[in-house]
Length: 286
Image (cartoon, rainbow, N blue to C red; front, top):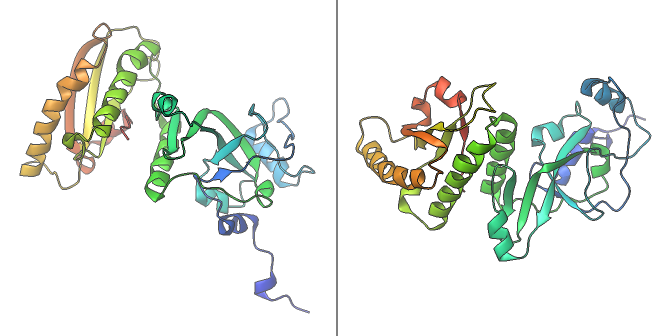
């Protein structure tokens, strides 16, 4: 007897997406051990994945993960890749729940941490990542992670930025990037009206091979204005005036010992040259 289409077994990836598995949702604590095969010496990632696709006797695996039992994870694989059966695993990051408001404020968002839900004190920690066999997710129910769709989109950008992020000398991170990030977040949280007209802020990255360069450094900022703030319009002029008053505040947050030159520019994204975009990294402020 022919099997009707409605009774056919759907592909694994499609079933997972229909269950609610997508980037930004949280994996509940794994109640069973999920140890599995590690790549053999000299085996490429592609070869390892291929072996898994051929069928593994283990139902679920993780590797490179040192979390304690009961640890939550957040899915950081794109939803389209979850739906695809060409990849047998999803990638996940550690989720930390911080209930102490003081500790949460101190740990808040950075290039290594992302605030999934401030109301619940949920942080994604990028330093601890693992891979999970997709088959394991069939037996689990996804839990809320990102607070809303805007947060989910911001999380996707943050995850992508992690892989595209340039390398910076430690002195630059401590004396420039970290204090500037903290000041931008502070101004945004305080409701500074000048921040509301900015789409993003980008910081010029270091060319490959210069990651260990000693201070002092040139600091070049690019402020991304809304698309309607085109060159020559009154809106662009007003936003530039706001940035001109913000720039000294940001410069004042930096360690003068490690800064030799500070400059900024502001343009809508579609007016920014490809070279300037590729040579800069996103500096989030929300």
